Length: 240
Image (tube, rainbow, N blue to C red; front, side, top):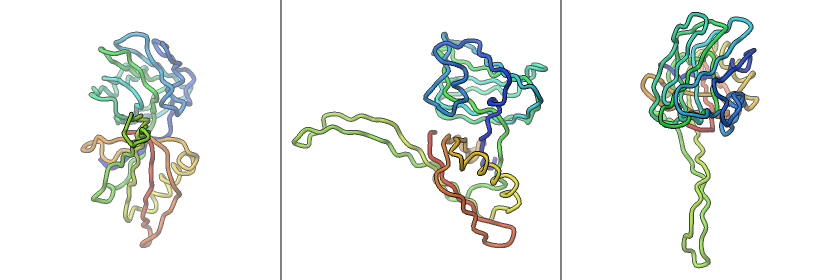
């Protein structure tokens, strides 16, 4: 699969968002662009988040950030069709795609049978797929830990405080079609990226599980190498 970006969260347009358990966190924490403010159930097991829209909306992807979910399902509540059913084996940022579907009612089913389920951010919408892979070779991400150390007067290490790890990626595309850029990427840039809103980026969900959730760092540059083609490069900083 070519690289994709998931950015516009259609849950924000919903007329109703209801969780089967609110527990320790408000369900609206799932769509506030703040992964550290979480929705958390009050017991282990299966939890449902039911979402309704006034008019028909289309969906093809879901992303999870800062979570301990071990199974995610998406159900079209108009006809009980299961659109997605995936098991998860770790707490990394996740991005799953499914056949594009239009509906006014979605049920997101989150399961953890060993721990109380929680999630910091859910993005539900339509993904934007690039027309070609990133330039090779590439490094999927760079991870920079932020650490504070305490030393004695003689220079002996007393303790270390690990704060967090910043993840960044720098995808590059050579000779990408200008029409695609103008019809897709520029919309993403103007309506979302340049405003500092976070998004998800995946290199190749079929072969590379790395997904990064973060914000754009830098400016838009589209040097034109030859007619109707441009080179594209951007930097994203956040979590994986």
